[in-house]
Structures are given as C-alpha cells and as structure tokens.
Amino acid sequence: MITHPTAAELTEALAGVEAGPPGDARAAFIARVADNARATLEREAALGPAAEAAAVARLRILLGRDGDFEALNAELCARLRDGRLAPLDPAVLAHLKAGLVDQVAIDQPSYWGLAALRSESAPR
Amino acid sequence: MDVSAALSALAPRLSAAATAALNVRRLSGGASQETWTFDLDDGTPLILRRRPPGGAMSAAALPLSTEAALQAAVGPRGAPVPEVVRVCEPADGLGEAYVMRRLSGETLGKRIVRDEAFAAVRPGLARRCGEVLATIHATPLDGLPPLNVSDAASELARYETVYRQSGARRPVFEAAFRWLEERAPPPLERPVLVHGDFRNGNLMISPEAGPNGGLIGVLDWELAHLGDPAEDLGWICVNSWRFGEWRRPVGGFGDYQDLLDGHAAAGGEPVSLDRLLFWQALGSLKWGVMCLMMYASFASGADRSIERAMIGRRASETEIDLVLLMEQAA
Figure 1 (cartoon, chains in turn brown, yellow):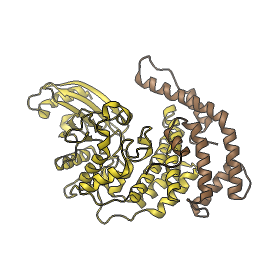
Figure 2 (cartoon, rainbow over the protein chains, first blue to last red):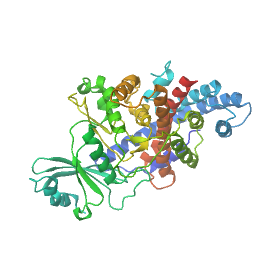
Figure 3 (cartoon, one colour):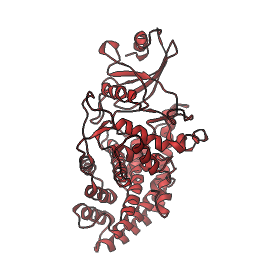
Figure 4 (tube, each protein chain N blue to C red):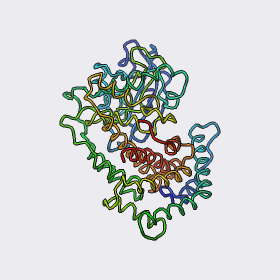
C-alpha cells in the first residue's frame, strides 16, 4: 500500500478543496493539483491491488518468509538498514525496480523517469 | 507595512536621480522570504528580497544580509549575480531585506530545456555552469560572513534522521542511505564556498550567448555553505530538474563531461565523474526526503492543503534516479 500520503489522506484533502474566485491563479493551480489527485486515486484503485499482490509474491521469495505487504516491506527495510541485505544485491534491486515501476505508474505516469527506468540504461 | 511606500521613501538612496518606486509587485514568497519586483522612476529595474514580518526562518536558511554579502563577494570575481544595491537598515522600514538589480532573462527550467529560443545557448550551457561554479568555489573565505560547514557524511546523517522521523518505510531510501554511507568522500581539509541550490529555477538564462554564455545570473543564495565543490556539480544533475530531457543529465541541457571540463578549465579542483554521481545520488535522496517533509506538514495538520498532501507522491520520482544509479554501480 502506498503511504505518505495514503489514498484515504488524499481523499480527505480533496474534500477540503474549495473553489476559488474565477481567474485567480492560486485557485487555478490548486484545481489542477486536485484533478491530479483524483486521477491518482483512480489509478491507485485500478492498479494498486495487483501491484501489492505482485510485491507480496516477490517479497516472500526475497525474504524467505510469509506475511502481508506491510510486514514484509517493514522486514525488507529492517534488513537493508542493519546490513543483512546489501543495497546493491541484484535480487534486492530487481524487487525495488519492479515496485517502483508499479508505484510511479500510479503516482506520476507521465514522469519522464519512468521511461528511463524502462530503457536500457541512464545517461552517463 | 506598506512595501510600496517604504520603497519610494528609499528611492533616492537606491539611485541618485530617483524619487519614487513604481510598479511594485510581489513575485513569490514562502514562509521564509518574499521577492518583490519594482522600478525606480529613473528607469532602474530592481528586486527586493525580504523576510516577511513574523516570518519563521527555516533552520537552513541564511540571514538575508549574508545572501547579499555572498553576492557582493562573488560578483567582482566574475560570477554572474545581480548587483546588490542596498542591504536594508531598520530605519528603511522594510525589516530584514536587501535590494538588488533586476536581471532580464528566463528561470523556468521547462522553457530553458525545450524552447526554440534557447536552442543556441543550450549546447554551451553545461560547460558555462562548470566555469561559473569553479569561480564561486574559488572565492576567498576571509571576510565572508559565518557559514555552516557540511560534508557528505553529515548531510547523510541529517537527512536519515529526518527520514526516520517521517515514519515512512521506503526500501529504496533504506538501500540508498547504506550505499551512500559506504561511499561517502571524507570531509575536505579546506571546504569551499558552495552555492547549495545551483539548479534550473535558480539560474537566469538569456537567449543570447553573449560574454556570459547565456548564464547571466545565479540566484537564491539562501542555502550557501562551506563544503565539497562536487556537491554543486551533482545537484544540477538531479533528475527532478531535467524537465523531461532526462538524456541530458546536466539540468536537461548538457552532458556530465561538459560540466566537469568547464569546472576544470576555470581552475576548479579536478572532480571525477564518480564523485559527481555520489553527490547527484545524495541530491536525489535529499529531494526525496524533502518531499516527505513537505507532506509531513499535511499529516501534522499544519497545512491541510491538497498541494502539501500530493507532494509526498513525488518522492517516488527521486527513487527512480536512485535505483538507476545503484544499478549502474552494481
């Protein structure tokens, strides 16, 4: 599940959006952000469950244990933090990359970095 | 306080022939500073930067008089910065503030990296950025106002603390903290003046190359400090300010080697691509943690706007940059 913010928090923030006076630049900006948030929520409802199920399946293999997404993701974070898993471990990177492709497809599908992630390599 | 009236009263001290301030308009402003544009009646175009009354100074931001002093120190050495006209005194009635010349150019990254108008300056811009950074980094420290000193390890530790406080569990950040910790370059024996926020948005670009190669102003000195020159070289390469031109790592307009060559040609200490990439990765990580910090003001109830909530969803874009850099290193 995506947090910081969660879908529930976005829904709550959207409920607090009030229409501004016509022609007001700040109100127009907020309206665009709100549209963006609504589209994000729609994508999350459509894509989120499958992304989470795929993450759980990957994490079970990577960590060699069972659990729900929150528990497995917390375990991955703990093992990376204390060094039981190395940051450049190819299996870790493969999981991170797959999860990121799914998350950015929900958060910012037009973000250019998604193309970089899906291409062969970044420029250098 | 009436900013317009205060500026008119100050006009004769800003330019001998002036008697009034015209076209006074606020451009932008956050919690820690405001920017105003105005003209004097003798035609002088100016900018006022001031701390809003009661405005909280963020822990990292410098006093405005320090920003002004840094611009005054680097300008005569050849770094393009707006000329400081006056550092305000209490009697000026503007609070903590300073006035500088207004430059004419473009700061919007999206236009700089894409518009046809900038096609002629783009090819030379990365090299020019390297040259200007070398000039800034070579500024003698004697006589500069007090500045914080930071290095790679202290910056990492600072941002890891903020990340832990956020309560987020993001494995990309966990991996990145450990990866960068292992590679962190040691503190420099002689840290240099670092701009600290050298990127699209803070660089004023002119469509004409001219003697300045298109880079006519380095703005926004509030994050300046003493540190590693590679910090500035890496920060402008963070993916979040390439505006879609992700194949051109330097600000969406140039290549790493042009930036490094410009820096070395202007007398900068040699910086390897690996060291630059370390600071680029740390920059992405910092920007990702900043997105979480901005979201935190929503979560705490301090700012319940949709804007603050949504910025948290931009943390994932920085994770892309980090994963790509870790893959390259693996």
